[in-house]
Length: 158
Image (cartoon, rainbow, N blue to C red):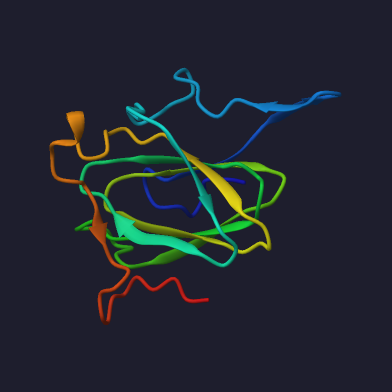
């Protein structure tokens, strides 16, 4: 998958899986391959049930570093929402196929959501560059939620 046509700062890449008789291994994060100052501060793994959506939301300062683990097929939807962008509110959809490791880096100001389009639960790893709720979880959460905003231009559709 190439990066042409993506919003500035967004990265989408299929990660290589190294397979042998025991199974497979995939390098999901290497600091020698990071660009644009992406520097993960924490990590979490989530499971999303079939048909469920996470988002849409955006961050004012945080960059998300998603790895779709290949356990299910996901569709990732992005909307450019940075002030001054000629692509403001432009929508992109990216497929993260089953049986493939897909990296999607989402910078601040890009609204994003993902939907499990499969019949099985799907796993997603995120290595954001900011701590959730700050150090010791004592700061405001950097999240602008759009899920329940009437008339929002950020509707994931079906």
